Every structure is written in C-alpha cells, then in structure tokens.
Length: 97
Image (tube, rainbow, N blue to C red):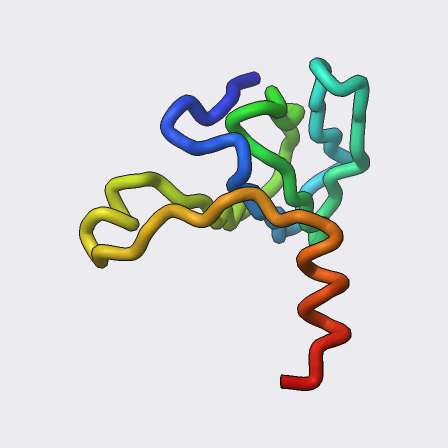
C-alpha cells in the first residue's frame, strides 16, 4: 500500500493489469474503495492523494502504469498542467472555433 509522493494531486495515474492469475483486488482505503482488479481492468486515480495497493496473487501478471513527474516536464520544457475544470471543458466543447 502506497501513495506516489513525487506526483501532483491534479495528475492521474493509469494502472492496467494483464495476465493469467486468480482473483485480485485493488485497495484504496483512504477513499473507501475496493475494486476487483482482474486481468484487463484499468484504474485511474490521483496517485498522490489516493493510497493504493493490490493483493498478492498466484500466477503471471504484468502491471502497466502510466504516471508523470515534474522532472519530465522540466526535461522537455513543458509547463505543468493545472486542474481540469468542468465548466472549461463544457465551454471548450461547445465552441466552434
């Protein structure tokens, strides 16, 4: 069980598990969620805010995790993104320009 201290709250991690293994669960105890984390399931959450962990299981499993650190932004000289705001998404989707 861990959180991602080098991430930022507004960034989401995407976690995908693939393989031949028995039933598994992903735990997110600080928000009271337990997910069936069987092969093919993808979960996205703020790794900085949400503590997360996965059961030990028998079998073969690969976990693909997509995440971001500030070092990557600094290396490619791209500013860090801010929080998405619901109204800005709606306004942008209604714009024809």
